[in-house]
Length: 274
Image (cartoon, rainbow, N blue to C red; front, side, top):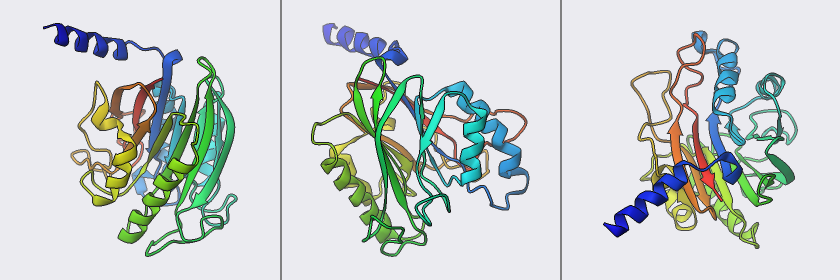
């Protein structure tokens, strides 16, 4: 009974933590803004994305498939966010960007960078058997309320190349280990294009923890809906290390505005406690 009470108190403590004690992080695949999606086109659902962000209010969030005009729209229509990231085609504005947005109210950007998931990570390039160029964007952020520093990495693994997914994620894992000699807390988000039992996740599972698995209050729903209300595949992830706990993991399936979907992926978010 005593152990049960202690465990229960721990759960209550995590669930009652305020944002001053941690970070709300989100991963959101916006869906490529030039896709011929008819009633699901970006122009028809972009306002719903803004409403979702205003509702969830993440401290930081990583987007996948974002083009420059999608990033610009989110910046222009939300308050207190800035972003970092580059287009994967030229290292500037061309192509999809694995951008990281951060709230200037709660976080301070200290450093950031982007690398390509390839044999030549410092220049725009396509790796192994990938169908597309793929990147990872990283940030070093300061949590203003607590003064704590943490790294945040956002990526999108290839949808075709099995070798590219394995090697790309291995590169991310190596960089996570080497970029953080002071063992600051670390967050990794992304569309990995693999299910939870895929072997390419094994090296990552050895050094970081899946928020979906660790959260006190977790959500079993899948994140990839492919514009179908009765579908949900688990291919989007939040991983962390160095935080004292994860109070929740949520898949955002609520409707915002009059559109049936805000993307072909539901956003996912977690509250991580320092």
